[in-house]
Image 1 (tube, rainbow, N blue to C red):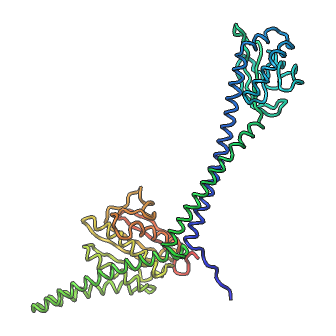
Image 2: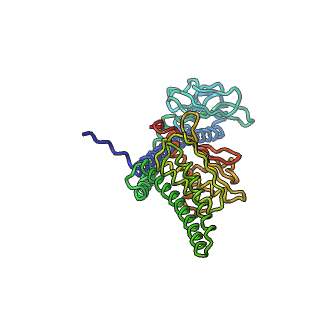
Length: 425
């Protein structure tokens, strides 16, 4: 005997989704921190090489040593100075050269007297670049060395190899990893709390059953309100008829009872004329007619006897229809000309079209998508079912393979559903 695998509970899905979101955010933050650290280290290398090169070029002894034209004497004077700057400033090389690019100093003594590997500007100006020289790829800045008159007599290049930059970056990575780990831990803690809260509300029910539970609650609520209104109306009429009989005004009592019977029978005839009708939907429509009368709303009902049964269950049908009628009554109750019209007919494709129209002020264009969001409502904060009805309607209809749209003149909520057996699996 095979067993059907149990669907993952809503709480578990919430936990998994939040954990996945936390990991994704942490990964993005980690990538951003690494890129930002790389940019910062590169910018720092450019600032250090530029400042060092400018400082060396401005040193009094550098210009005078290059101005003599004796490269050997210049090397003896400047090489120790350049090596000390390399050590003090944390640079990888400092190259002092003649105006035509012949090295006077270099960390590798064998390279002294050779031509500088890098870009020498056509005119005396600073230049920062990445270039591969004798020590490998490096960030380097070259600046002119001016004499007392301001004329260039040579060049100074200071550089940091990309290997050194990478080492600096690696030293800063642990901080990024710690920040990422903290984000993941906070995300996991938040996901755990969210899962606990969701489990308290929904238990171990999967999302589909949670939606069914909400739909069932909405169905019971709207059907209960409708039946209460119908019972209240019939009770009022019966009390009035009994009082008239006690007063001996029998014809008036008979007229009230006859009118009640005639109105009820007209509604019953429309509901029962539909060959594929649902008793729960019929009871809802009869109850809503009484509720409309109780609120002073003109109730209009047109049912196509040939309309097929929709793909919705009885519970979902009552939930969808009841919520749409409740919203229509709320809208109509806010204006002087109060009416609500419900039309149930066959669609051209063989499905079912449900129109619920009202005389209300309508739905602003800016809110036509927002009103279907869970938690949004134009009703007062204490209104029952606030922010759930229309969101549930769209969810139920979409799951059945149907659609919901809003039409104007008059305001109409149109639900199009496939016939039973043609819905989305």
